[in-house]
Length: 104
Image (cartoon, rainbow, N blue to C red; front, side, top):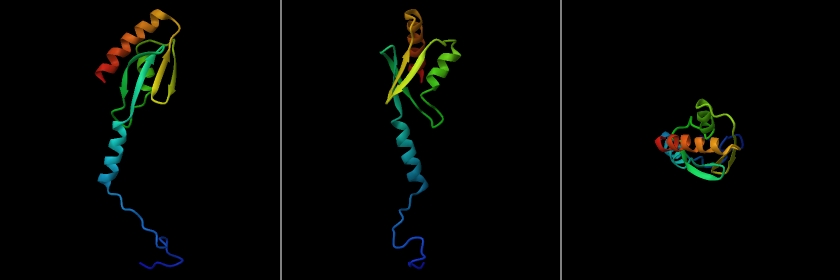
């Protein structure tokens, strides 16, 4: 390999990353993808993203599948906030999420 003005390397050392190192880096990132879930500022539990296809919005999608529609969500760092105006509905959502987050 020639190192000159037309060389793509120009004396630069290119680090070699093995597929194992790449997988290890991706898996370690997944281990840290965890969110604290709150309903009206009350802590309900942790949502851990176990696979790359999971997202924090899966929580609201789950609530919609359970026929809860009257809520708003906000992501602030690692805090996923769910806001519900109706106190009774908020209690029902908390109970549903408590079960959902404990089995995930």
